[in-house]
Length: 294
Image (spheres, rainbow, N blue to C red):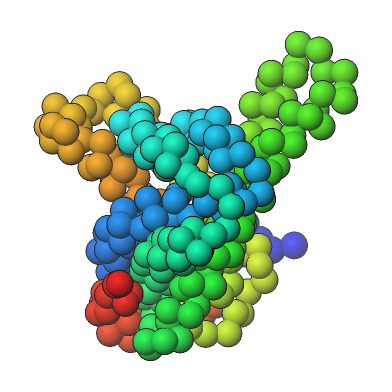
């Protein structure tokens, strides 16, 4: 059995290396860049999910399921997202015609901006150079499609869960069970999405298994920070009073920053555990390339 003192010493060394890495590789600054591109990509991404779900089922069902994010997203940002989802659902045309197919390809190409920026951020956290040109875009598009697939599976799970739970005699616990199941779906989606990014995003061969310590840290920090930020804005902060009509956009941008930092924080922990030098190649920390904007 490892003596407690040795365990505490290794933990302190890991935390110290993480702090050094976060500074040397400018993770906070890189997170801001990722958040900016995520803001540009979110609405094309939502449009693509609506279009894809519309091929399988009634896209209006998405409106009811967006409420899953209410606990994690600030109210103003949530209202902005809901308004955009409602507009996209209202404008959705069923079937996979030529126009719909072209529109879907365009939205996929646009939404890969956010994923491409996240890949660059994870590479920066690992201290490795980004992939070049075409290869970078191919990986970004592949991950974008994969993440949308995760979102579609989550939507299907949320639709099916109440039906499955109805077969169990839960009585007064039914509402609690559905709410708990919804939370678990959200966390499972985030867990799966971040795991995909950690596995296939870095420009290196994976050295750790799928369920890395950084993955658990990232999802834990994301969930707690998101709920905390939403609570702060609901009770203390008022972005609308400061930024006026841009308050909802600023709140959404800040939430993306928190989310990006949580993901890169987990990547930094993985990098330390893999034995990387925190003072490694600083060139990889620069947000040097725009992820091939359209």
